[in-house]
Image (cartoon, rainbow, N blue to C red; front, side):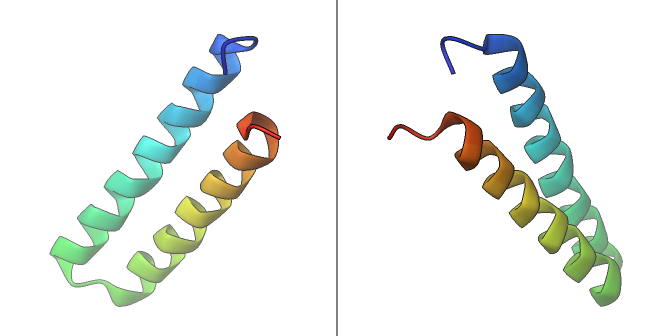
Length: 55
């Protein structure tokens, strides 16, 4: 994350937007949209960890 702060910030922004989408869908009671948003959030997490996880 320190060696690529712009990419890290972009990944954090994608994650934040994805989690907000879950909340919006949950409040609306839209289970299908919520499940789709959960999958998107999980993909965002996975992409982040592939690039920025300490090895």
